[in-house]
Image 1: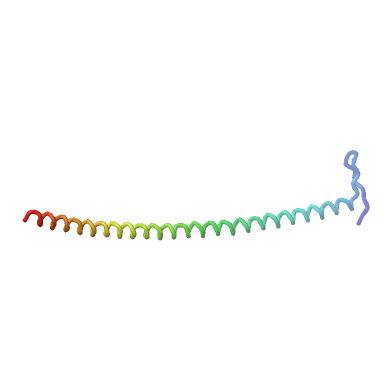
Image 2: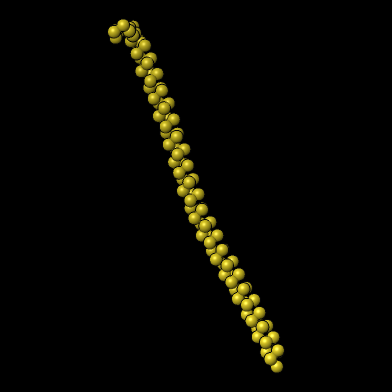
Length: 99
């Protein structure tokens, strides 16, 4: 390498130092870009995970809703059957007493 000096005001820099600085900055930039790329990949994977979770929550929500509707319908049917039995019993009891 050349051992040329360059003056900037009161500072004197040797050309070999400039080459090292360029190499060092390129290495730091490359490392920073790799870090940004890794973070972008992690963020993308996280977004995919979140989208999958949203889909799963929606599917589970529909399933829970259907189950709740079925259980409520079954409960209403059971109450209506019990109501019919009680009404039949009350009617028979009333008819028995009126005889």
